[in-house]
Length: 322
Image 1 (spheres, rainbow, N blue to C red):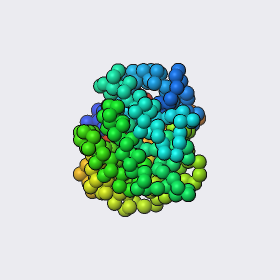
Image 2 (spheres, helix red, strand yellow; image 1 turned 120 degrees about the vertical axis):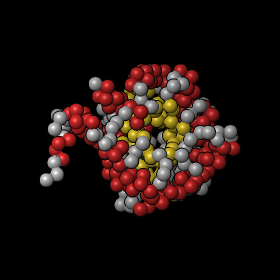
Image 3 (spheres, one colour; image 1 turned 30 degrees about the vertical axis):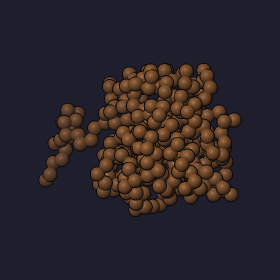
Image 4 (spheres, rainbow, N blue to C red; image 1 turned 90 degrees about the vertical axis):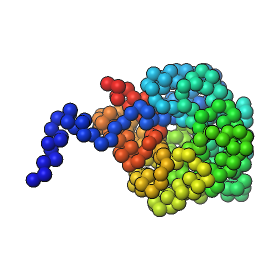
């Protein structure tokens, strides 16, 4: 008889042989920054998550700093009247995200600042690229994404993270960054980003729901795992330094296959819908939130993630310190 239980009989032994461990150094915490002043607006579909104006950022940044979390992922929300078809606020030197980055790097230089690169929060139609006759244009969108990435790097972003899923955007952004003197700015590519129902609460948080149609013509079909490997391979060839699978829980098979195939750091995004489902069940007393969150994040790391972007980061940091 093989007695596996010998190594399970108490907490000391179980901890001694534990294969996968979580650390605060694994986490990136997403933050929503909104144009305006004196704003800390709760996101109704995401308990304990807020939109912050720049003057309110210290409240959350101090908490991030105390937690010793690796860094933040920044999402900018312009005023509704500033949105237009060309997403001009996305690459404006005075855009909300650019101003937020400058503030963060001036006041919290020790916090790694990763910026999302996508047009959906800045377009009047809510899609991630330029639109003509209800078609989302691929090639015409690439120069705008490149301008956005360069403007964010110029503002001081430590890393840019294209999430748009336009073909060829990693190559275009890499060339633009290099030509503007930002050769050392890494790219974290949302390489396998699926057209998922798990994004619903995020669209509330970022005010980025599309005004017509959906994003299935550019985000991946959730039925396709092999296609994800081709997307990831293309992004690596085009110059991505880190690649991402998004969402996390329903796509751990994709993450595990990709991490076993490609020798590059992998990130995973534990997205808003995954967060809100756990929060809703915990608020009803149906689950043990700490145990569920720990189990979920361990699964992501076990599947191959080196970096976990999660709204649970601050809570998990607190639990790990106990």
